[in-house]
Length: 578
Image (cartoon, rainbow, N blue to C red):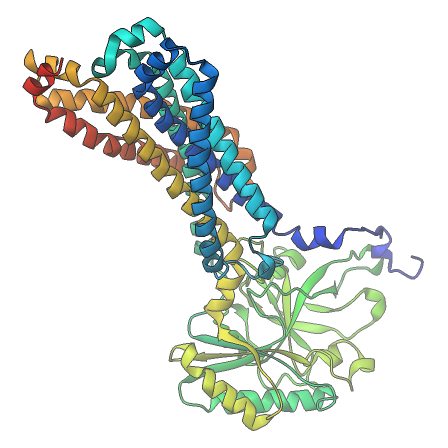
């Protein structure tokens, strides 16, 4: 530590030991938690839905249960039979789900972000199949127990007297049916609000200006072999040939080369010193140093805010110049104009040559657009050796490789062949890597957030469809139980519109109660959801209102068919069935 500059004396270095497996999945762990949350919510709604359907079935079998109990059958026998039926249903559903999952995994691997570790190892092994089957059997058993217990907890004599046709005794379980519907709506609304927040967050991120214009830009990575290009002069000759050759091709507007590409996630921080800062008060600070060649800024459409761009006159024997981005200019010279200021690489003790700021450009996002802008400065590719001192003047430093960027008047995909053939003419042995449009690079870096959004949205839609199915089943069953009541109302002069309104109002009450509980649940998990969002609150009123209105509308639509059927019933036929 005694050899460190004064500004670095406060730095404490310590080791941090982490398991390789933990390090590999650390970035993707929030994504896996999101996936587990969404799957759990959908599974819970499916369980509630199945429980509701089994309850309807158990209510219809109440008289059968009563007869069997009257003939001496024990309750345990009936419960075992119901559980066995539930296990058969869940086993069949589990096997069907596994077959569907095997197909879905193959299709789902394509949109997964490349940043997700061990993507190639995602498959269904024995432990996954066993867990899925056990989970299916457990849910089937649990979902069949509650309806059976509810059906058995009735008066035996009343069940025998009621008969199958009247079904009035089933009204004693209306609270359980209503509770299942309310819980389905509440759970679906929670997932729907989370999905809405993710969608709003993704929209906010896409609305952020990346600081450049990626349209019609083609990018190709390359690495110069040290044996063929041992010095900066040889690398400079290669860069010059590439830029001149590509610029002469028809359809190409501008060509540039850089070592750090925006939206690629690259970061090469370099310490720097500002002229005028005393050596004793110097503090360690970093900025991303990019080397550029050719018309790089115009190629990517990076706006010039002050000063000028680099020119071909900014060579190694010319005065050292740099361009800084807006963030670095504001941090380094707050309230002052950056043009004409001088900086150099490293600490004041280095004594390296000063470089003059000749331009200020807009901030460009080095990673995803939801990440904060970093301080960045640019230097001509011909000057890094001089910038880093005389000892580096003869070796290859900043120009060993990087990215060729070209802007064309035509779609960038059509310029791939032109780019490859031009490089082959200059160096037939040099291989290009990751030749792709700039928009594809942006899509790749935004893939994790897009995947999160698509995943939650898909599960939210699935949960909403399951909830609608449950609402329809329960409302339809309730209408069938009230067929005679509805017939009597119509015989006494009730209008068909009034009957339909009665059914819809009953469903709307359940939906409103479920929405209220769902909004409370969304508020309860908002703190967890906030960590995944960008410039959007998990309690955004617009998201909550939209989600609640969507659920209410879908609940009313699910109840519309049973309501229409009830209103169109013939009262004479219903009364004759009494």
